[in-house]
Length: 76
Image (tube, rainbow, N blue to C red; front, side, top):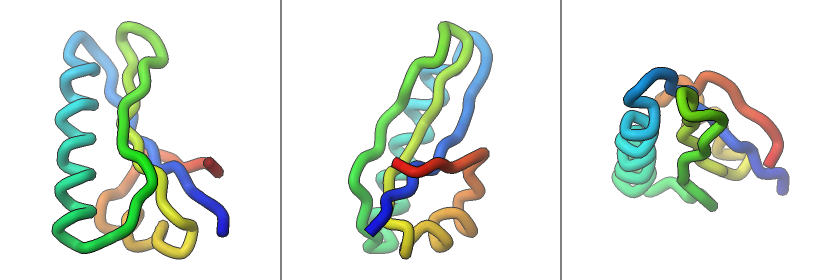
């Protein structure tokens, strides 16, 4: 089964803290809704751009996408 990485971008001086905060909410949502995920983390693109992401099965992607409205997604 293919894995999808759903991504949220955060820009600015507080981007790292905002991405970390968002990642915590991704984990809370997944646990509350009893949804499987592979990884939740943040990634630095540059000092002013951080991304929060969650990697999920393609079959679960629509549930996450519709509820959480990621900025973009890609194959993991």
